[in-house]
Length: 235
Length: 401
Image 1 (cartoon, helix red, strand yellow):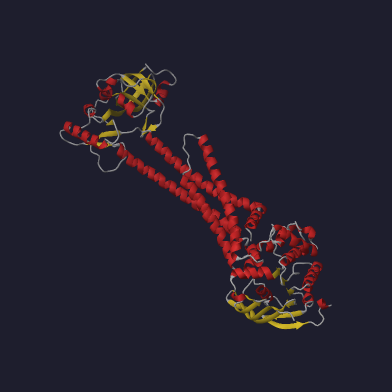
Image 2: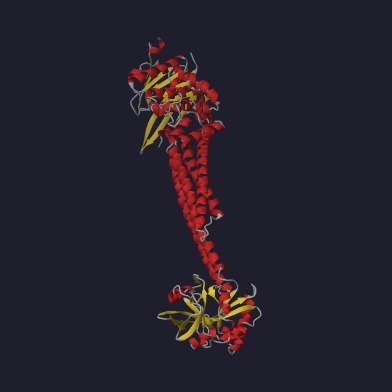
């Protein structure tokens, strides 16, 4: 059994929506092992994206603890949180979040730039990943010159350049047509088979069902947590 | 993040958002230029006034009949006195050791006519010294004779405009005309010159003081102009003048003396007023420029909140994000200030070439303060939204509002 990669205990998060506090995460307890493939499903407003953001340290818990690998994150300084985020987590957004003025290569190599890698080192790392994702010929294109599927691949490349342990995807197929969505999911699953812990938040039941472990959230609580016996990635 | 990457990232942001960069540069440059141009206008006006006043002639004192009351009024003060100043008084004054020249003046209006044409103009009776003291120069002919103080002679000097009106382009020198019914011969013409201390010298005729005495049939002087031999002797001279006049006027001190000092006080009042106006102009234009730069900086960074969120999500720390945006706005504002200053100075340079009479000049403090203000405001208002966005959790900044 692999050691646990993510461990959240009694996690709470409240947003103020107008006058009323909205309990987005209600006493969440969750442990995820390294190399797992997990989908989080649920209606909108159920807190699944918030959970993913907290795991990715884009957001913080109001109370409770979150342990990432060996670090207890809730007490870390801003600086070390940034470093942890950079080293261990790759994040894929529904709307890609690429910077429009930067080329595909420049976008994908941003985390390397932040990690002070030289330009030639960046080329060494980014180009094979682009090749692997099938967008090697798009290195110097601007985002506006790329299709949705290609944009998401650039975003995936950006999430992979730091060889993270954990890959978080928030509705990665939400802005894609069915065919390219399917391709993106297969890509992510391939990466999971190579050892990355993969978390996908999705509306799409068909995509959710493919995961080894499936969580369902309603009103800030995890209501079902099933481990499928014959998931596709076990074939 | 390496320093070179920091600069490269900013460089890309500036070069690939060309329109945004140009607009921001323009905002900063126009802000700085407008401050420079406005203050140079004010400073030019100040220099112009200073120059005009220094043309007045140095060390001039004016003696007026009657005691000056503190009822206000400006420089031509018409005092009332039981005893008038006379030409003899003026002669007595000219014997004071510190006085160089005296010019007694009788003034009145008289009908000047030549052939069919006639004009009612100011007629001044005075002596040769009057021309020296008031810096009047002749375009033709000669000044009043040295004997003007002693005896009447039928000669006159015409102002530029008056000569044009009476004679047109014909020769005036040597011609006889009538002033108030008496015949005078034209012996000199004044050079064209504008107003001088409220007197339009172009529309005027000058005759010997003794002639004016008989023309107006009154010995009383309008005033006496004096020049001093050296600066700094005003107080002593004033004392001497009062003593001499008092002796001649049965012990009564019934004159007023306007000295350079008094003129300087009113002159300084004008200058300080103009200086204050320049300060106000500069302040207003600085405030306007400041707001302009503030708004464009603030808006342009605020609109990139999601970029800040993304950088943080990708592992940038708060201080790295702040440094990026600080570098970018420093480059931008720095360039803008340079463009603004060179634009301002070139416009002023061209203007001084085209209008050499009006001394436009950018005061150094306007350059320094506008550059400083642009830097502080521009950087503060890019840094502020950037640092606010960088402080938030990435998920909030990523939403972009």
